[in-house]
Image 1 (spheres, rainbow, N blue to C red):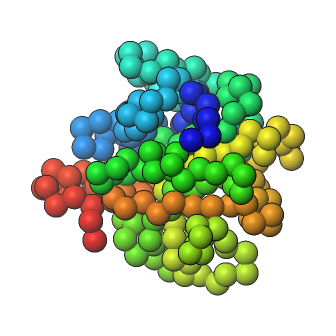
Image 2: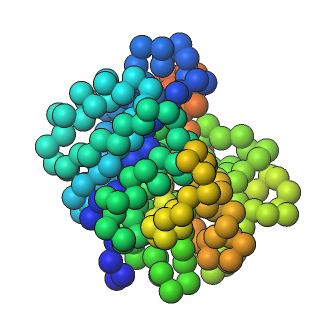
Length: 243
C-alpha cells in the first residue's frame, strides 16, 4: 500500500457553540460519549490503525484539552495551540510540517463513530490510491447517520468512489463523518491564514480527484445537548446508533 504519514491530525479547537451550556465549562472534544471523551474515541482509532503520533490543535479551553492529553501513553501527542481560531483548513496548514511530506489522516475530535468488523481507517488505507486521488473522505448514507439533517447531506458518490457536490441539489445521499486522508501539497500554499476544509474539497472536486469510502458502521453527530443525551442513552440501553 502507498505510504501514509505515521503522524495524523486531530482537530479539537472549535468553540462548541451549539453545545452550550455543556461547553461553557468543558470543551466539546472532552464531552463523554459511552464513558470516554470524544477526543479519546478519535485517538483510539488512530492507535488501532498503527498511527504513532497525533497533532492536536487547541484554542477554546485549550488548557483542559492539553491536560487531558497528558494521560495518553499509547500515542505521542504534539499540541498545535492557536492564538486565533484558524478554522479546519487553517488548523491543518499550521501543523503541516509534522507530516513529513506524506499523505496523512485528519480526524475531527467531536464526531464519534462505531466500526463494524473492519475499522474504517483500515478500509480507507486500503482504498487510498495517490495516482488518482488527492483526498479521500469517510462518508455515510445520510439517512443512516444519526444527528444530521436528512434534508441536506454533503456529497454524492459515483460507483468508482469519486465524490461530488457541485450542482447537486440537496438532499445529497452522503454526509462526511470526520475522517479524511489528504495530500500535504493541497495545503502547502494555503489561500489565507484562516480557511475551511471546504476550500480544499472544492479544488479537488474540480479536478475530479476527490474520492470517498462508505462507512459501514454507525455514527452520531453530537451537535447539541439533546444529541449528547440521546447518543449516550442509546449506548447505555444497548440499542446503539443503528437506524
